[in-house]
Amino acid sequence: MSKVLQISNLHVAIDGKEILKGVNLTVRQGEVHALMGPNGSGKSTLSYALAGHPSYEVTEGSATLDGQDLLALDADERAKAGLFLAFQYPTSIPGVTVANFLRHAVSNVRNPDRKEGEELISMREFRKELREQMDVLGMDPEFARRYLNEGFSGGEKKRAEVLQLAMLRPAFAILDETDSGLDIDAVRVVSEGVNKVAEREKTGVLVITHYQRILNYIKPSFVHILFGGRIVEEGGPELVTLLEEQGYDWVRSKYPDAAKDEDELEQQQNSPSGQLTF
Ligand code: ADP
Ligand code: MG
Image (cartoon, rainbow, N blue to C red):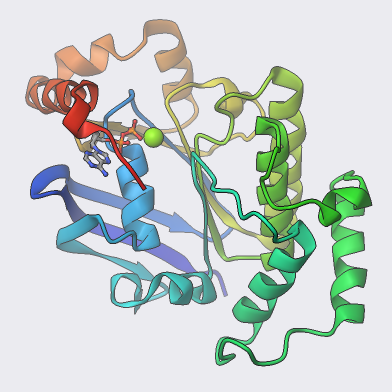
């Protein structure tokens, strides 16, 4: 049975300032969607809100995964429910190897009742699976021994995330600007990895990007344009081509009210107080 991720009338505020103004989005397992929008339109705000980041306050609306209220869950429970998020700026965890991190993550997600400190999945079983997945993704086994994200190149950070995706096998994956800072070969490698896992596991994928490049490799069937904190246009891959050819200007003139909100968001983003510290 295919699961459904449903976001309805989602409003999100940061420091009391409304950023998302009623987002509706439905992703079914096995579908590939793209959420496109200029910088500052609220794309990352959506992924942080779905992740349960405390600075992002949901003031109205809902997000459910197969009917289960995601917003009522702790961040780690959302992962157990089947949601995977790859952030635009992954953090490094000094002293924790990729393998060790993955063994904990896999143990938590596969045994939802596991308490911290309880047994992890067996080393033997884990190693075997890790080796298989790295092989499928064409990764050097040595990579698993490195400290997570420490000194990783942009491409390596993203490959570490694809490996997580392959090991965790979530029902839904949200990939925020997965191609930012990558050269074209790295984009291709990472995209191929995502496609492999998504096809195999029937993952519902939401690719978030302001730029069409990655969509040449991860091909969406559904495209949504976020502008001024709301989704103003929806369609198929033809929207990607349209944005590539014409930029966001036509969106701006077609939706003047959203354009006003977008300008405000943009100003805020450029002011020092709009900068984020995590
Ligand atoms: P996008 O990912 O589409 O570029 P974001 O969701 O990152 O856009 O940002 C949308 C707006 O919200 C911008 O105006 C940005 O400055 C603001 N914003 C995002 N996160 C924060 C935060 N933690 N604190 C203050 N403002 C934020
Ligand atoms: Mg962003």
